[in-house]
Image 1 (cartoon, rainbow, N blue to C red):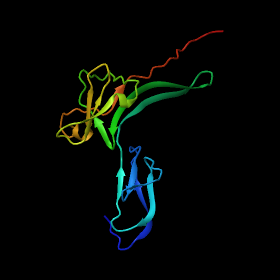
Image 2 (cartoon, one colour):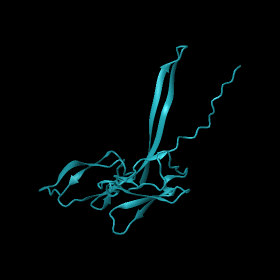
Image 3 (tube, one colour):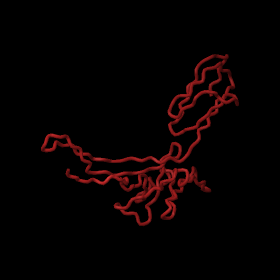
Image 4 (tube, one colour):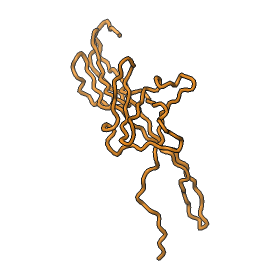
Length: 187
């Protein structure tokens, strides 16, 4: 902590992490009345004196991250039209809680061809933080509804440093449902 020898006015900049949606700050116990945005800098311009304190409140909630690995072939049809055809698509989901990535052990019965079907409900309804006695950090229970809950732990605790340990960070998801049916209607 810096202890200035005399009071001085300057701007203090504090980086608010991207995951800290709803963050707030206090200076000497008084709430900072500034717009605080996750992933941006909080700027506090004021006279500062020895003993001033800044307290950040960085709320955490579980977050689901979806990613797709796609391969689209582009070619020219015989009539000269440009055509783009998706030939490969793998959808995945991962979990974070605050700054930590989460992983689970091998899912019972999991095979490379199987996927995890996520509920349509809001994530807060089926991802639950769980405090575990004698273990640092929170764990996450994922309630899928069609099987026993999946327990996720911070990646650093999931066996990543143990030979032969399995950890699953990205869960394979089924392809998205499409309502459109391709038809060839001649006129």
